[in-house]
Image (cartoon, rainbow, N blue to C red; front, side):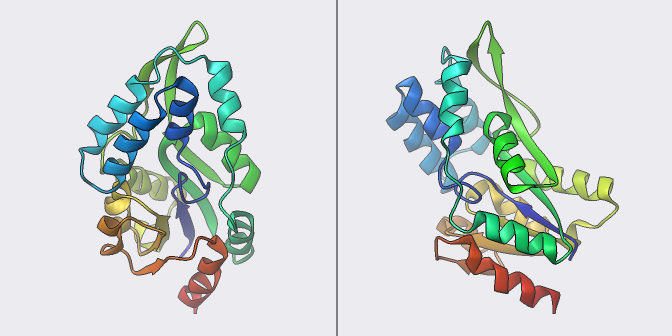
Amino acid sequence: MKMIVFDMDSTLIDAETIDELAAVAGVGEEVADITERAMNGELDYGEALRERVGLLKGLSTIRARHACESLPLMQGARELVDSVKQMGYKTAMITCGFMISARRVGEMLGIDYIIANDLATNNGTLTGEVIGDLTECDSKARMLKDLAQRCGIDPQECVAIGDGANDIYLFENAGYSIAFNAKPVLRGHADVAVDRKDLRAIIPIIQGIRR
């Protein structure tokens, strides 16, 4: 194994970025409900993503950035990332979330590769459109293959960590997968599940993989 690939929302951070943006935009309950159903695999992920982003139309970029500045890291995130880097792993974050939060989280944790969508803007406000290649249920798997090729490794040499239905294809293409406080729909696709809401619990699992 040569690379650890993290999801962001509800994995590296203890929040769902789009839900926090929606709360600021005044559509929090509506968007949170769609998020929950999408992560449970009850809705088409691409349609659900576009519907949720559409509800953010008109939110100022200033307010959006401010909301993202307070997103909390998941307990144990720093320790896990530091540990795997000390073990010699490269690290990546592949998220269907947005660079408005992913860049900050990636820089805080020292993640090597950050792959995320963007929120379209016009005259200082969100247009309600999403820009990027991570908009469908299998998008993370395609990004994993692309990143692995660029790094000269095989997807089977990657460990994937995530929590929702949009991680299913990612898990199926990685060499080893860890479901972290995951939705039931994802757990059956994982090599191991961690129910403790502390990323430090993953450290001994990855140490075991190396042996």
